[in-house]
Length: 104
Image (cartoon, rainbow, N blue to C red; front, side, top):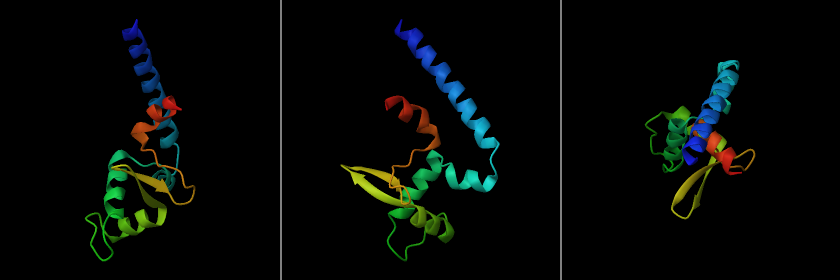
């Protein structure tokens, strides 16, 4: 029975991400770049925010500027979390949206 529930959840997750990708693909590339953050980009932004002033970012100065403009870093225990400066909400990478919604 728990295997059936796991299969159902996997199917729901696959359908959810299919719909997400369908919606994302209908957006202008600029909006995708602004509003859709992948785990890789999330990790890079975290790294950029932890750099001291004057230290070069391996992803370039524009990326460091972008990360500093849009995000702030919060530490909860030993975990570092990106927060959106505009909404003061935690940022959820695209790959974690389903699990985050499921938990709420």
